[in-house]
Length: 239
Image (cartoon, rainbow, N blue to C red; front, side, top):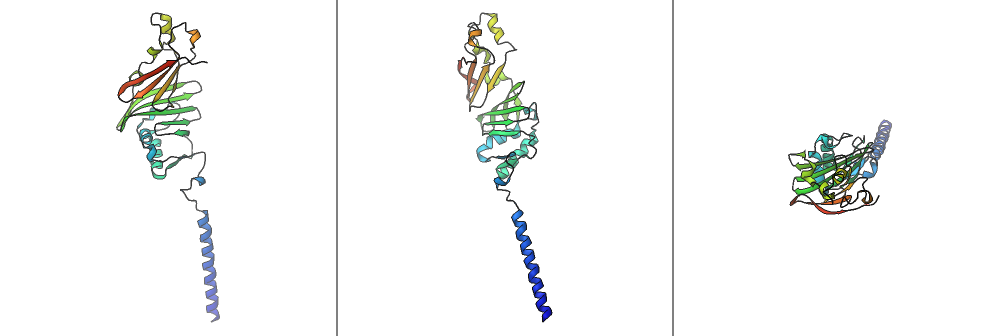
């Protein structure tokens, strides 16, 4: 009888110990859906459906999308799949930079070497005009693409946004005026506004051009029925 009592007490003690250990282990398991438990610096919360276009675009754009850092097509496919499954993406290495803006038609990423921007202009389902801008301390790269579901190709700038340089010219009779807009002219591109592009002629101001130009900045508007972009206006901007 005594042996039975001792055996019963031993079993109860063992079961209690097992239950206690199980409870402790459960508390240490993190809920993967709780974003507050994920690293802040490398976690990007994105809802899949509202950003479907941009997530599709990123999987189609070629490896050459960037110049000074790597964001391969496979990296972007993995990115899309993660967002589709979890509505967030975690980059534990931060090799792809820190995405600071993610809209369905525009993204911006901060990298160790500068910034990268991509703006999408939708013609129809699966067909887009894509503009990218990569900026480093010393250089700015502006590239124009046409994208279909089967792939994306770099297209000459004039075919996508037009020969905007000619719109700057006011006086076409003097060679000095043409020289202001020769191949050495530098432009800054703003692709942050939906459906628009703002282009500024760098380091050129009204008092220095002797009546040669209509302005030093131009606004272009995207119209899917008109190719290329439509000129909205030209104006002078101060230093």
